[in-house]
Amino acid sequence: MTRAPGQPLRVSAALCALLAALAAGCDCRECAPPVTAQAGSAPAWADAPAVPPVAFFERACANCHGPGGMFYGEGFAAMSDDAELARVVHEMVIGPARTTLDDASTAALVAYHRHLRESVRRPFVVLTRIDGGRVEGEVSGGARVVVVADGREVEATVVDHAWSVVLTGPPRASLVVRARADGEPTDETELDLGRAAWTHDAPPESSVSSKGGA
Image (cartoon, rainbow, N blue to C red; front, side):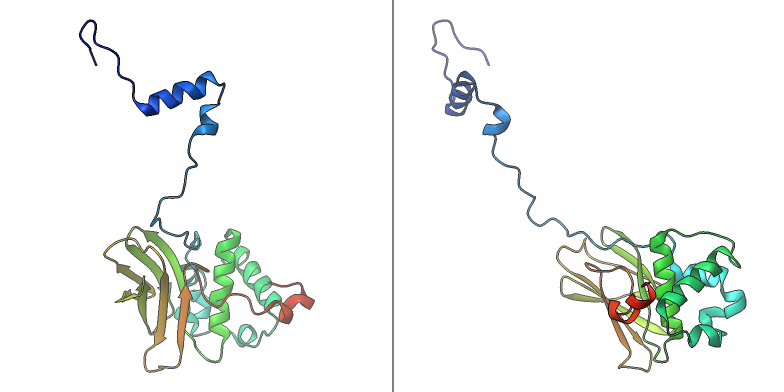
């Protein structure tokens, strides 16, 4: 900005306050107002496993155990010790499957095995990706999936074991996935993605603590 010769320099009140603070030896970082979180920012959703468990099972385990675990061994199904189940699943990943999984992916795979061994076939649900308004995951066979985002229900598209839904925008407050087995209205699973990325997590600690936990 230029001014005519002889015209007085006008300084804003804010600049005057800043100059006064500097003259007093004030650190501007201390004088600056605190930074607050932006209103309406999305919450942190649970982290999806790097390796989707149902796809891994179909690729690495179904040759012996059948698609969707239809040939699931009686030994697995009768295994009541959760720590033993986790150990056997881990050994089969590095043994017959001849691969390795990170801890979260292994935990999700063990959770899927918990679903397979249940006598009541409550649907298994897992998150695999959230990208803006697109939410994707996996579900056990024969189940419908509904996503409830900020209180609004949207039915997901299910192809084989993969489900997906496109919302009008990123969810801002709540994101819940519900799965219900076709023809079994009581067998419904609800997954709050603000708390967990898959269902059928470890049983209560009291039931496995004496065995070392899962």
